[in-house]
Image (cartoon, rainbow, N blue to C red):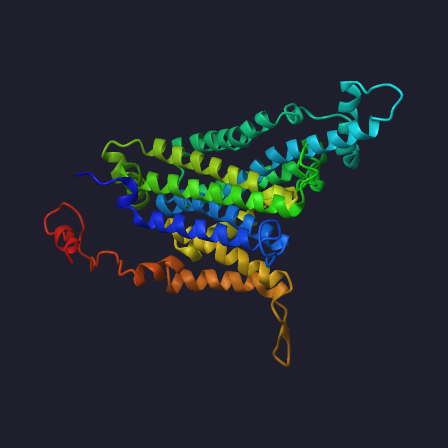
Length: 410
């Protein structure tokens, strides 16, 4: 009798149960629905952390399973934030303009309202008209579609050009980083249509929900982030548990052999690259309304490098490892950089963690790479008694003398 997906992957149920209990616990400790033990700002931090876990999950799929070290996935994350941020800023500004023109002798025309919105948004960069990229900013459904389409099409075009040319390894990583840098430099310009270095602000003010307190909004976004992470984890586990996941891992381990077996390596890589770009964009669309602001600095290549560090620390090639790594580093970073960590006085010098945190993170990455390549997730494997086959230099496969059958029974 064939087992179902969840029965074959009990770790997925464990993850979903832990996430559900965590969500319930945070809700009961919130100001809006519980004992007010957790502050609204901390609940926003937790919601943003769940979004970072989701983009780390996407990074683990493309790097840990497919072997594509992308240093540009935070660009897709930021693009998702920009797409939803355009609607948030436009609709909120429109509400303000309509209220300001309500007392005018004559009712305001749609053109007057549009001009008022444009001058309010782009006056800071010397503009008075809405750029073409804001054509659909008035429509929430269209902007939600762009959250998926813009990063997805960019990833599709980039991936098609790169993979059909069979660019791999460090060269592909450099290309993804170059794409991210080029996009960031473009958005820094005032004529990019997205307010240049000023970015989009006031995103925490949700149009039509002016009467809802930030206490409730923070919990609502936390719920949405938890639901997105649960759905993303379930979908990712389903993808890697079947034949598709086996082919991805085979491409990671020996791309040429998979190609010689007749599989469309470029097609698999293009699909997973585009799919994870869309997942990253969805995570960004949930993250930035909680952050309240987005600017081109969010697309800096260093952000994508941090993302790779999170996945490596958590355990590359383990979905739960990516989530653990992102949550661990994100919350620890918030603690160190938020001034909560006490300074360490060494007598001859004082360690201020706000300045030393990045050095500590880099050191942790080096140590994990050298001493614990399986990351934090490897500790869970060790506790559960899971281990990789001990090949001891011998082949593992269908060839004569392979240890496949013997090691499967050990």
